[in-house]
Amino acid sequence: MSEKVRVGFIGSGGIAGTHIKYLKMVPGVDVIALSDVSQAAMDARIKEHELKDVKTFTDYKPLLKMKDVDAVSVCTPNCMHYRPTVDALRAGKHVIVEKPMAMSAREAQAMCDAAKKARKVLSIGFQQRFRPDAQFVRRAVAEGQLGDILYCRAQALRRRGIPSWGVFGRKDLQGGGPLIDIGVHIIELTHFLIGKPRPIAASASMATYLGNKRPEATAPWGDWDYKTYTVEDLAVGFVRFEGGATMTIEASFAAHLEQDIFATTVMGTKGGAAVGFGPPKVFTDWCGKMINLEPKAMEKDEAFAAKMRNWIGSIRGADNPAPGEDGVMVQKILDALYLSAEKGREVAIK
Image (cartoon, one colour):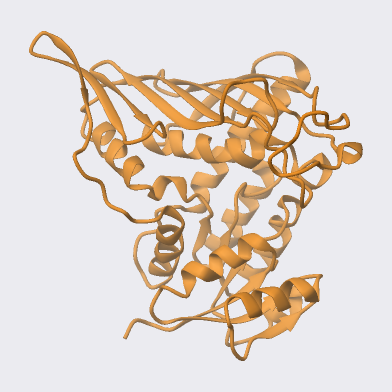
């Protein structure tokens, strides 16, 4: 039997339910404690997943004092990622924290420092890299099949996908809008695909023109709270990496486009690839012709399931495929894009 891992949760909202769903599929894992400011949220998770003998706390600190808790999943709003993560690591717990890692790269680095000092695993909730199509393209890049990477186009676009729940429209609590919420996923995926090069500079432009007004068109998720909406509707950015690769990023909660897009395209000197437009595809030249390559079959593994399974695996001694250090680099990109939009010029990333 695999080593038993007993997990506690800081934050028990909807995303915690997804974590629990997939943790229950991993042998030797028990969810034994939940914390949340809302007792109703904890009760909902217990009922939803038929959890037994689970202790609940409206303050996470008593949970961290439980000797039986080996690891903690942090599923709080963005502004509450840093403090609970550091506290959990200092209490000797392994941690997975949902994306984005923190509200700033400074916070993210402090979280990594705490993990290193505690000698505990810190994983970031980056599930996109575990997708079978992403693993396929990552291998193609790593083996040099695409040559030197020149350019990537990362897109996380919603025509009208402003969440009507939670605090997604609150910059003070989330740090931003679509760029930091859904853009972070396509950024981390693209960054992973091309080998995680060091970002050196970024520029961006952002606009708010729909979210802060009373909704006129019918929205798929219902009307949002436009009176408290302080984030961008649309973010467009450009990132330069060490070694010469570049990336554009497009992210929106609300935009006038035909359809939602969540995909990335990679272009290299020998070939290109696309993830997110259906099955993964590779574009190259062969025997004097331009050809498109597509796998005949792909694995069916769910990315979120792989994320949780790999977190537990890293606690048990395997390599961590989504380490805190990756989160720091992604956070530096996010910080630079927001700063550039504020200042109206390109900014360096150190």
